[in-house]
Image (cartoon, rainbow, N blue to C red; front, side):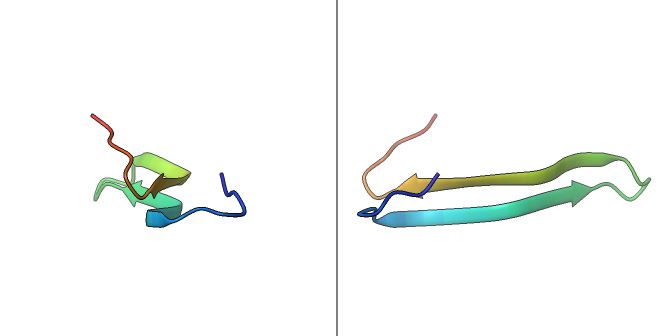
Length: 40
């Protein structure tokens, strides 16, 4: 997800969320948001 001439406003790598009961909700999620991009 990387390009040579990007202006990243936000970059998340290897995000993981585990609930207190041990259930894994997210594992290995990575993404980036470029400057000027909008997501809904």
